[in-house]
Amino acid sequence: MLRWILGGREAQGTVESAALFIGEEQPKNCFTEMQVLKGHFDIVRFLVQIDDLRFASAGDDGLVLIWNVETGDHLIELRGHTQQITAMISYTFIRGGNAHTALITASSDRTLSLWDPDSGNRVQNISDLQSPVKCLLVLVRLDVWLSGGNELCVWNRDFELQCKTVHHSDAGISAMVELPKNFIAAAMDKEIVIFKLNLSGSDIAVMAMRHLADHQDTIHSLIHVNDGLFASGSHIGELIIWDSVDWTIQAYEHILWEEPARDGQSEFKLNHQKPIERSIQHMSSDGEYIVAAVGSGLYVYNVLMKSVVAYRRIAHDSNVLHTVLQQDGCLMSCSEDGSVRMWELQDLPLPAEPASSGFFGMFGTFGRSSKQTGPPAKKIPEVPGLRSLELIGDLIGHSGAVQMFLSFKEKGLVTCSTDHLLIVWKDGEFQSQLRSLAVFQKLQENQEL
Image (cartoon, rainbow, N blue to C red; front, side, top):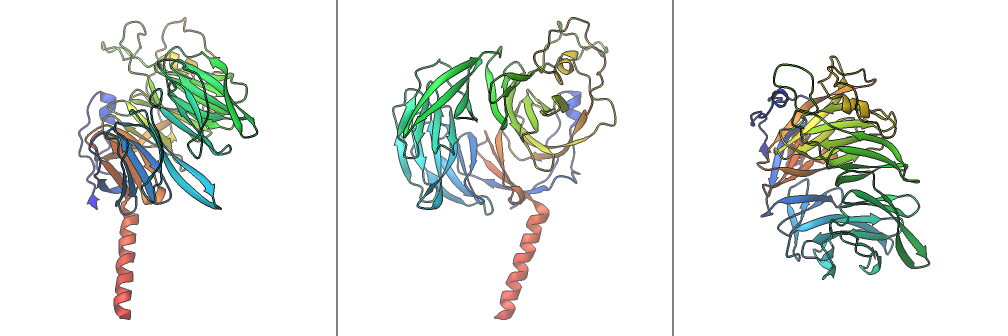
């Protein structure tokens, strides 16, 4: 176990980014120990939890590795794919009265594989697919799973193809979410296609029901929000919240930040300043809030209030790749800059940072907003409930872009990166207590002898 020394990376970039350099004193950051896991020899892109102790990692080397989060032990290596892994998901089903968890992986070699993480065996394998699979979705209630690429395929637990759609587009299906009443929403380039699974006895058929063409650019993120809503985010910062039953737009936000003028003026010149990257790379939700990773910034949106709660125009030095909301009201993000950051929502003591009127003219509105016709605002309008997003922890350990992370609560946080490494971040105080308890138990055993 290695002791993590904080503050080892100098702040870079803009003045705002430098202000986020938190230093060594991080009293609200419990992750003060880390363990580096080696086994991959290329970019690690995916992490999937198997059970309370085990997780799987996969990436561009085509390997799937099984790990123990408590000990850091490399348990099993799953070999079979000849090219990079493009998607991975766990699949838990009941067989013989017992629950079994398997892993499903897809690869650029146009194969799909079902793995037993206990034995390491490749139980099933499908080859010669029409195109590489980009996303996977398990429908627990129907005991089937879906693969998305240039076509949508429905499979049973025995890897038998139940039905599929025809060829769609060169872009293919990039993400899927489950909707009520056997409907599926799939992101395809600029559109969301609603599919219906029709059940007739043991037969299943899939049919496209509607095309939602409200985005103006490529959709990068599609997530389930709650039983009544799902959300999508595009390359140009469009965030749309949809009704899961009738597929109507419940809120439309266009997140657009502009570089401040360099002549000392505080106003934002929409037509003359270079826009900051505003692509929505990732979103996560706990059912009440949505966190959107927009360029290098973070935006927290309250679904019930239909308004922004907090934001950071520059939360990292580079694009944010992954986010998650935690149960304690905090959130985490990781970035191409190699860092993992912890954030806390706090009451706003001072006016927030300047924003273009387009951003707050959109947030908190219901439905599409019209284009701005007046001059750009020079100060932030009053936004009820707006809070600050304060940096409380900065985990520095990776030398490459952090692709995603996986939380095991008190057992630790796992991160993966382009540096080919995984890191398990652990609560130093909790680990110290465990070591003290182990020593005490050992002393008791020696005394009994």
